[in-house]
Image (cartoon, rainbow, N blue to C red; front, side, top):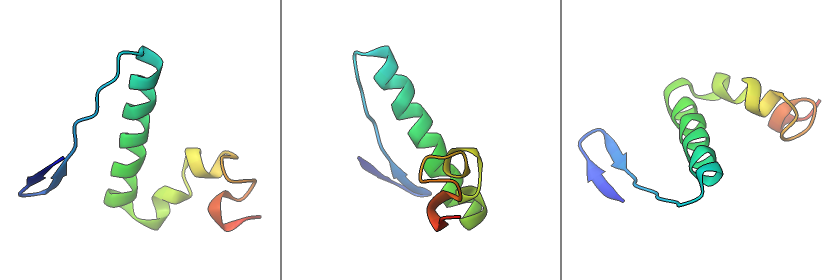
Length: 59
């Protein structure tokens, strides 16, 4: 992890292609939370059943 004028630059590596895909998907979700705030939490990943029917807030 390194400092960056716009935030933090993180480098993660893996030899398993499925794990690499998971790391990239997670990074995209985190970026969405930072960029869009609470509305991003109501998007497909969180609202699609990851934390229950109503996302993190319940149903």
